[in-house]
View 1: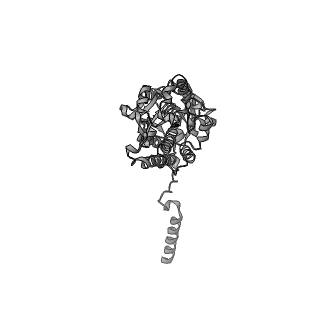
View 2: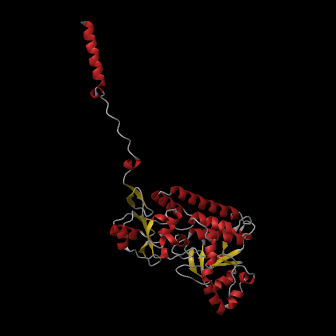
View 3: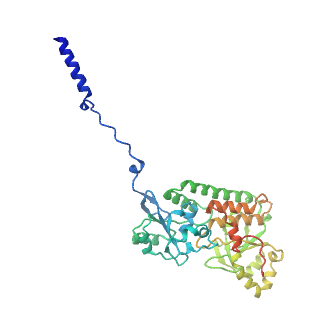
Length: 370
């Protein structure tokens, strides 16, 4: 009897062990996919100090002002669905419009662009991009977001080698998922800044030729009396700019008689404004012929980089070209064409020097009166 009871007890235990009820643990839940775990939105702080809630993943973007240039530098212009009329101009003086010409041609205009820029709010609302990047003032950016109900990220930067430029690249790269590309651009710009400074920082002032940049474009084209104090390409190479003695900073008009007093050894002019210089030469020949730079054939090009805000890549190439002319021994190892297209490729994604040359806005010696 004991053996029978033991056998029955064993069978009952075995039966209970095989029952689903015997396993008290719950099945392990399936692992959540990254998409399931991601928040739909996140909050960033733009360059105007505004907190903006944006989608975590951006598929489409539009711009206001000249923001398309920065998106080009950041390697994400392909995500643009709306640009300004000026962005679609395919103008050699704005390289980002040329390298993006094919992509921008069919995009919806969402603003005028330029100094009299207005946004086309209805077009923006219809497009409904995930985000708008705006190179605009605080009030305009805030109003644009209120009107369209689309997140607007304000960009604000000045200069060539500046923390603002680097911060703009970092911000756009973080938002658009191109941080790795932006890091390469930032590192490249910092390397150019260091290289230009290292080549020229130890040259005594008494060993530097005096230089002048004329026919500079700002709010339109100008003749030889349109100039720039603290001219960024000259600052980058520690050049002896005669205009700096005015104590001013930035673009300004100068009395031509002051140029006679300074009589700079080397003069740089903007190729695109040579028509204005030559028109003045026709009626003031003695003024020009009296300048030592004209007598000695020391007139060279500086391509205008301020057009619908700053074309940073052209400004950096300007600095290298000016350095080669002012201090030929310090830049003797530089192949200008290779260096220029290296800079253009870093910033724009492709070479560009030949396009400048073909447009008549390239580098080289200039002859006043021709």
